[in-house]
Amino acid sequence: METFKIQQLTYFYPMKDEPALKDVTLSVDEGEFILVLGRSGSGKSTLGRVFNRIVPEFYGGRIKGRITGTDEIGMVFQDPEKQLVMDCVERELAFGLENIGAQYGIMKKKVMETLSFMNIMDVRGKKTYELSGGQKQKVAIGAMLSMGYRFLVLDEPTSQLDPSSSEEIMHVIKRLNDELGYTVILIEQTIDRCFHLADRILFMDEGRLIFDGTPREFAAWENAGKTEFLPSVSGLFSKLGWTDVPLTVKEGRSKLRKLESLVTGEVKNQKCGSGDEAIRTDNLCFAYEDGPPVLKGLDMTIYKGEILGIMGENGGGKSTLLKTFSGLLSPVKGRVSVDGEVGYLSQEPNDYLFNDTVYDELKFTLDNNNIKDYSVIDVILDELGISMCRNKNPRDLSSGEKQRVALASILVMDPDILLLDEPTRGLDRHLKNRLRGTILRLRDKGKTIVLITHDVEFAAGLCDRVCLLFDGSIAQVGSRYEVLGSGIYYSTQISKLFSGYNDSVLTLEDALGCVGFKRKGAL
Image 1 (cartoon, helix red, strand yellow):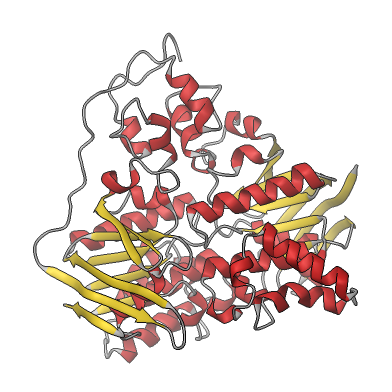
Image 2 (cartoon, rainbow, N blue to C red):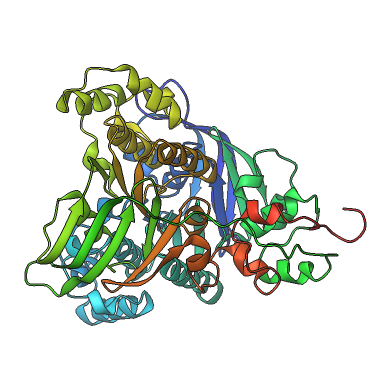
């Protein structure tokens, strides 16, 4: 049964000459699971806001076309900070119910069920501002569930979650769809874990809806730009010329059995750190005021000219560790030694954006550091693919564009050591690859880069070494092949595909480099 319909919708944000949505026609049936794909700035988030009338009723602007459907729609935004209004987790989940006058018994039941369903019972009494980014995201999703909305729009709900929590959230969303009949519109950039779950794929390009079909139809769709929006396993077989590409690791492994041969030689390993020290910690301990230990006696060395990726569970101490490197936090015990000028990018880009234009934002950084060579501004903007945003207000940009502007405000300082907290948040695969190239070029110039990421695929294609941090302690440090090549959650889809066949294959590039990797007979 059709529950929502959009007909020939064109929408302009206020004071904009270019439409954010162009002649979009779409219908949604009750109980569908729809995945919305597209590059950053393609109109995905704007389309999501149409469903619950935030566009145009909140944002304003010009609109033409017709929208019909239910008003009972819950939305989870890209940035959970924007929708957390209470200071306590339990009160946040109850806030919406209080506003509609729910009875106390019903309200308590729904809140407790949601805490259990989202696996956040352990933080029920915590202050929302004390939570990690991933925990805040879980609470934001839980607030929508406690309200009982049966139509959910989720805008990148896993962008700040570790791999384990991402799997958990996707399992929750799929259960809501399968077992309770919820209608789900999911906007995502990290697609390996959700592509095969969807009933339909919508693909946006420059404000237009240019594809609407099943995941398998999308995989077979002849479009040059669609490959980067396929899961890693599907992308591999697509690049090899297969027409019937697998959508999951399980399907992919069954096809591997039909291949003539797999290369047995080792993939060239990435270099591991050695030489001069950029950062060193000795028995590093930290705890927030009146709180439990967050960092527990860490001993680690980061070498000059290397890229170190820090991964681990939400709330495990990763961001706190980066803040001790930057000097924003002082250890309660132990020592941190840093050799070089540090540039630090937090996981919240809005903290860096307060000028009227992107150019002024970067100019402010240069002026503040007494650097008068403004030519570097356009070089960095072009490097990050945001030259078109030069004269725009940073607050009007998409989440991915804001992330890149915040990064640009750090790069213009040309620091010796770059500390990046989830730099790929809100970026599509094309922009991630561009960022990867930028970081590699910085390393080639002798810069040291330390980055926190939940994106295993990104870390596997970039980092020299990877450090796994759990509950404030280091679980493992080693080359990316050592750490990411044999994990359960902290492992790439390609590695899982080749496990037992060729354990040295970690990335798509590794797999494509396998001599003799071809299908029996004609492709």
